Image 1 (cartoon, one colour):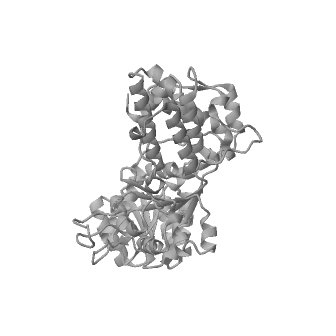
Image 2 (cartoon, helix red, strand yellow):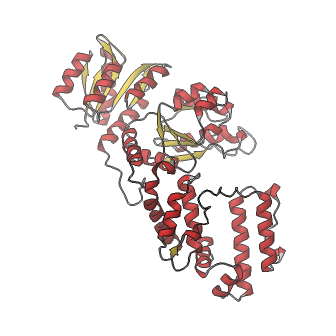
Length: 470
């Protein structure tokens, strides 16, 4: 495909001429067509790297051309020219397979950016590389997901990734980014539930110096950080209503206004979002704006739960154990037949993330590098899974460990639930203090320290490596 030719379909000569002059510095030669029939005739005679079409044509609608290209030229990016503010038609075009859209009167810089992105799509390879993440699994369900990701990567349409917690929604978003024309630009993930509500506007849109107390200099927001690339809104359902309104405007206008700025600045980002919640139900209950849902859910990608492709568990487990061995510097552990049987019989309410946690625990506890069924600490068939630990049970376990190993209180952090903001970091401090205390009491004899802590020598080596104490 010749990426230097563009088909421009519009019945207004001045629009065609303006687009041709705008794209000339990019090395793009524009071939004009005034009608659908003329465009179809050119497509039969000539190969193109891009098509830009107006919606209203003398003999039909530009959406008809989008559908025609999807059927006969699926690899040809097509952008639709829409009237300003007509987002409904723009969304319809994206659903039909349009690469992107541009609104009249269009800004020339935005038009050039859109065309440059489309041309990168044709010049880009498959995005393979040593550091490229891989979506594992040979099941039909995962094969379908991979095929859809490859197709979605060629579009600039907003995508809503749905699925239970732990199914790999961020990984899917990264693959969409890396497989598309923005692969060499930033991928900026943001957990919408982790940003305090009063900081959301400044975090997303940035702020100007002096706009509020503490704003000593200009700062760009997440949209600016993702310029030219992809902004991934994880757990988008957690956005409060006021922020949903601001996000909707940013998506519709393709511009943001930093806090304290007098004017908006244009943005060029692709929006991907994800949620483990059912946004349709949230919209019905009034917990999520319907118009924002309509903008984000142009195309939906659903990731199956691990229960729906349990035949992939052996492959996933082997990949996780290989990574754990590489990270810890220890020999790779293997799964005994009893462990594999136990994993296949388990329901995995936490999906792949739970599988990773289970195998990490078993990796540290197993003997001789072989994980037995008992090392997984999973409930037997018919037995309900144990409830998740509460803060009170964690306190009791820590107090018991302190008493059993005679740790002095001054060597451990003080547990005050009101001041604990990150439980994982806090428990890591507890673990670090306990291991250091055991090493001190055994004069840094690791074998004796492991026995004192009630864990295997292999488990101690793993934890020392993990905590950076080796």
